[in-house]
Image 1 (spheres, rainbow, N blue to C red):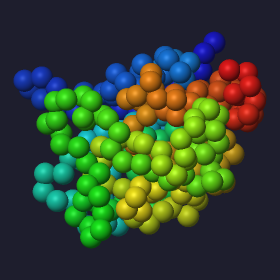
Image 2 (image 1 turned 90 degrees about the vertical axis):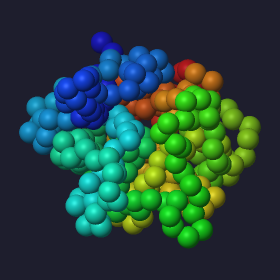
Image 3 (image 1 turned 90 degrees about the horizontal axis):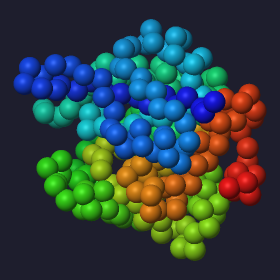
Image 4 (image 1 turned 135 degrees about the horizontal axis):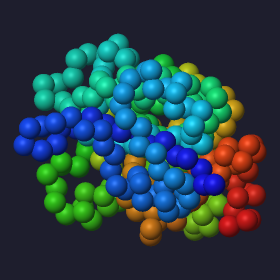
Length: 269
């Protein structure tokens, strides 16, 4: 039996009647079937009541990216600028789900919006428009960009902390480039402002924006990245290894074992 991987969904309007649908990008389904090696389970944005019902059935949780932003009420922030997409149904589901999953030791991988949710769920706050802050890069990609190689291509380097979990994943991938200049894509406006007390920063963009974190006291695998490794895992060794290590942790959870170390995982690969 393969591990059951919960994938967070957004509520999006579809069709001529703008009917609300619960949806996640196909890229998360494909990466679950690919290097994660699990069975994708789409989690509707159905609110906190979903959490105790679904959590015992999962072997891992992947928090997805999205154009919508975490509602500022969850971190006592100012109101979003007019026109900023929000998804309060997703917020009401993912934030309590994150806290419950980490408390249980369930493997968690948070990506882009999910990375921001992880920070907010554990008590951190967000900068809403990084590009408007003095001395900061524009981390966004125009939503109307039609060229995939531009939209999802490498945008800037990140520097990895030498003793970080992500640096160990970098080493496990057998990469030769310097870990202080890891190229990543960038498709976000918001980012971590005040880091949650339980999170440890593991990577930074050239302007100081936090790009990766781990949950310091989590009993199991629990980390997040601000970029989108699901876009390029087929040809990027770091992206693929992030998912392989997460998948190994989920497989161990499904089998009732503690997560294997990175070294053990790589030796068996």
